[in-house]
Structures are given as structure tokens and as C-alpha cells.
Amino acid sequence: MGLILQIDTATEHASICLSRNGIPLLSAESADQKNHGSFLQPAIQELMAKYGEKLAALDAIAVTEGPGSYTGLRVGLASAKGICYALQIPLITINTLKVIAVSSIKSKADDANRYAYIPMIDARRMEVFTAVYDQKLNFIESPQAKILDENAFLSILNEKPTIFCGSGSVKFQSICQHPHAIFSTLQHQAKDMSALAFNALEEKSFANLAYCEPFYLKSFYTPPPKK
Image (spheres, rainbow, N blue to C red):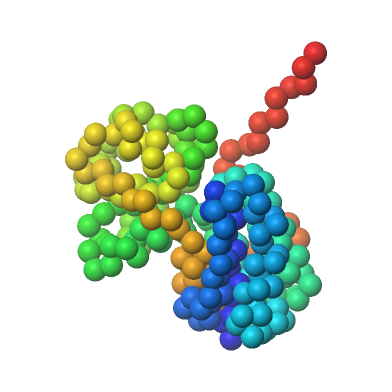
């Protein structure tokens, strides 16, 4: 029990991981954002072959649901849903911002409770997809699309040291001078989903395979056709 394939294609960096009972076993990754689709299926086949099991041995698939790249989210969720449907196993969806936060929380180990955690995903210009978590992954602020300025998150920064992480944090670093602001360069990976995915499996917290959709957070804008 507890063998889960984890898929993250939500951001510039794609990765997959095989875990059992919340412990990462094997992983693979790609930093080529334009080729997430061509990376994913061969990487899954190679990972399962390396582990010595067929896809049929899986107990569930976990995938980052968003926010993130519109194309990347569709690639990951479509692949996850297809495997789940074929094998008749449950689908677990996990918020991308939560996975990024987990990466930073793990890096702080014993003193994680000293900080607030603010993952950021670049959403073009000075906008980011973001949320604010404590060390137990409780929301301080729920996921939102936020336009950054030098006073963003000021009340949180005044209260305690705050770790900013993810691709969008680079933009905030260029305008934030607060002494409590800490900027992490850690790259989250699918292995950071392991404990979250296993907890969801144990609690039977599954997505509706037929109706679940990516969590875009912000509507996709299509410019009107030129006249």
C-alpha cells in the first residue's frame, strides 16, 4: 500500500517522484519548460522500470493542480487523469503553492515555527500567484493573484521573519528592503508532495476524476482578434 506517483508540471521546472507511505523513492526532473509534455510520459515509464514495477502497482496518482503555467497544468492533470482512469485508482490534487512552501519548511527543520512562508509563482509583470502559510501549512492568507509593491506583506514582515520562495520571489526581492524578508533559492520538486499525498491517500481525500480541473486562480486572457 501507499505507492504513489507524483507529478508536478505546474511551473518552469517539471518533476516526477515515486513514493511509498510518504517517503520518496525515485525521482526525475526537467528544467525545459517548453517540453514538459514530451518529458512526462517517457520519464514515468523510465521511473517505473527503474523501480521494477508496472503502473498497475500504483495505489494513487498525485498532481499539482495549480496555480501555475496554464499549459503545464493541463499537461500534468491530463496525464494523471488518464493513468487513474485506465488503472481505476484515485487521483490526488495538491495546490502548487503548498508544495513550494513545504520545500522551504523542510529546509528550516527544528526552527521552522520562527517563520512565515510565502511561496510565489511568477504571473508576468509585477504580479504573482501567492499565499501565506505558517509552519504547519495553515493559511495566514489564502491563494491569490497579487500585484507586488514595496509595501506588500508589510504586516506579516513586521511581525516575524518571512521566507519568500518560488519563481515569483525574485521580483519581490528587487523591491523589498525589509530586514525580516528572507529569499530562498530552493527549487521545489515532486518529492516535496510525498507526505501530503500519503496523508490524502490515508484520508481518502480524492479529486473527482471526471470533473476536476486545474486551479488556474486567474482566468486565461485571450486578446480580441485584430480587425
